[in-house]
Length: 212
Image 1 (cartoon, rainbow, N blue to C red):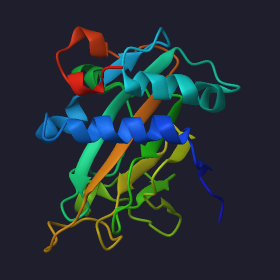
Image 2: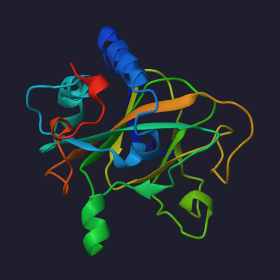
Image 3: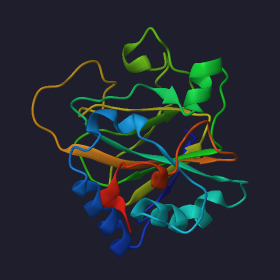
């Protein structure tokens, strides 16, 4: 079966990866309930925080052969026993909500910060289905799965459907019992233009612990 993703590991020099992991841990519960709504735009200027340093480092590898204007980034922090994101396609979120128009990034990418039980990233060409738990596609035979491992980068086409499996690596269908570690990733969408109303990190008061 054809893999839909490109893997790089280790993606970052150890010192930079360790600093990123430490700074994300320093955020503690800041905006934890709104982790997927806390997004930022970086247009490849001088880095002002550790995430922008990471993007600057990854840029030559990810953007080779592509016309990329910048990166929309956010942190995904949740437990695989309580997955908080459905299967979806990345898009200009505010544009889609306002007009219904679907515009996708050129490339999507995820940098895993730690290892957890289950919690695989699942990527597929199939579309999400509203009739299924977690909006999972009807056909699951062709999923490309990527397990969370520290400093592992996965890159894929920005139009592809993807989601997160639960702690048993099954399609999430409710909260699972028992303890689990927080699954931490840095999500980066690489765009040919700036998506609608996504602020610069410096324009907000969020995530100050990430400052360089």
